[in-house]
Structure formats: C-alpha cells, structure tokens
Image 1: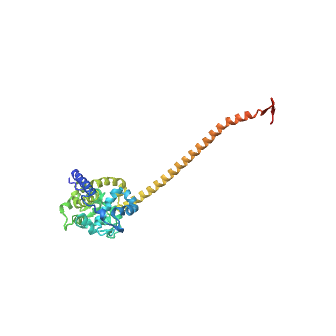
Image 2: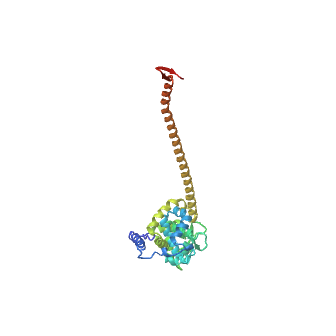
Image 3: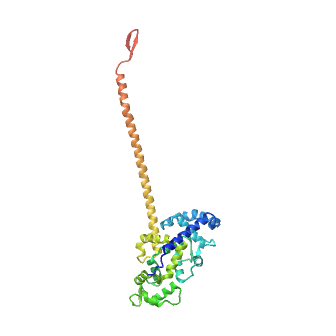
Length: 328
C-alpha cells in the first residue's frame, strides 16, 4: 500500500532539524531575520503588527483553532512572506509562487476553499482559517473535497464522465488514466460513489497523489508535517459531527468558532460568578471573625464589671481624727 499523505520518521526529523537550525541562525545573526527590518502595514514591524493588531483582533479565533501566540505568528509570517507587496491580501498567483506548486484547477479549488468571501484574495483571517482547514484534512476529507467538486447535486455518486473530469482536474492532465477509472469504480456499475472512492483511497492513496502532495507541501512550509498530523487528530474530535455529514467545512468551522466563543463567554460568566461567591464568602468570614471578636471582648469585660460592682456594694469610708465617716 502506498502512503503519500504522511511523512517518514526521517523526514519529520529532518523538518524539525531544519526549523531549529533556521531559528538558531537568525538568533545569532548568521542569517538575517527579514521580519526585524521589514515594515508592514502602518509602517510597523511584523512582530509589532502581529501583537497590536492580529493577536488583539483574532487571538481568540487563533486559540480556538489550537494556535499559540508563537505558532500563530509563524502562520502570520508565512502570510506576509506571500504578501510581498504589503497589500494585506494574497492572490492565487502569489500563493502558488510562494508554495512552489504549479497552478492547476485543483490547486485553485483548494485556494477557493481558503477564500471565504470568494473575492479571489485572502486576508489573514481567511488565510489562517483556510490553512488550518486544509492542513487538518485527513484522507477522508481530501477524498470528500475531490469528490464534491463533481458531485454538484450531492447525489453521493458520479458517473464515469464526471469521475474522468475529477481525475483530470486533480492530475492537471488532458486525459484520465483508464486504469484509475476502473480502479475507483469498484463494482463496475458505471458510477463511482463516495464510499467507493474512499475505499480506494484508503487502500492506495496514490489515486489522488497530487492532492496529498499539495497538502504535504503546504504543511511543510507552515509549522511542519508533524504539527499538522497532531492537529488532524484534534480536528477529528471537534469536527466529528460535521466532517462525517454533508455540512461544508466552512459551515463546520463557523459553527465550531461560534460554539467555542459561546463556551468562552459562558466560562467567563462562570468565573465571574465564582469570584463573586468567593468574595461574598470572604466577606461573611470577616463578619463572623468580627462578631466572634466582639463576643470575646464582651465576655472578657463581664468579670471585670462584676468585680467593680462588688466593690461598689461597700460604702466608701473616710478616716477623720481616728473615726470613720461614710460620705456617700
């Protein structure tokens, strides 16, 4: 079985070593860090722009998607590397040039799933969500994307002409390999169902090799293959109810973001109420201590008062010339 969707242990180790080496070279000034000399929107350095604008406005969304402050900056760094004209947006040609992948109908389709508003340009919000979306697709997700490009009426099956067009789009070829067509039509009924295509890809994902190659290249350029393999597992938890159905990935992402935003607000409200309860408890404890202190002081005063009262029961006598007189 051929597996092109992942990366060998040696490849992962090489990626990690390259990233660490690059950071060290920049740290010691051996290689110039262009982000320290470059000026981005508003004339700000990229790190300052990220901190004061991106993290302020999109930090919550980044964290919902699993990015930390640092990993989010890595994604932003990739974005501004593509946006070399400082327009705040990246186009399809800039994207392919940066990725080093030839533009095909399928890669443009992938760019399209990043382009949330269909403008043909990506701002950073679209870019970060889209990169996360595409890079966390498992084999089923990539298969579903390729299949749905032809199953426009969502019947769950495409005829061989549509299957031929799907393979030509993925491979950027004028004619599909007839052996591949035969391979994906498992029962030979002249149609290819989603289940048939998924079963074929599970057994041999070289059937959609260019699609997996495109994902692997984008993973390597941003945060590394290993990072995205771990995030793919995390996605399967959050998106289990969406990716298995007919809901589009964008709808799923919007739902997840809305759910997580609501959960955050609910958690903040819970923490606020908990803080109020703790403060009220401390206030009550303070009152109890003050009350006990007053009771203890009152208890201590009672014996002294009794003693004074006993002393007051005898008349005050004054001696005058050897005789005692009561002047009270």
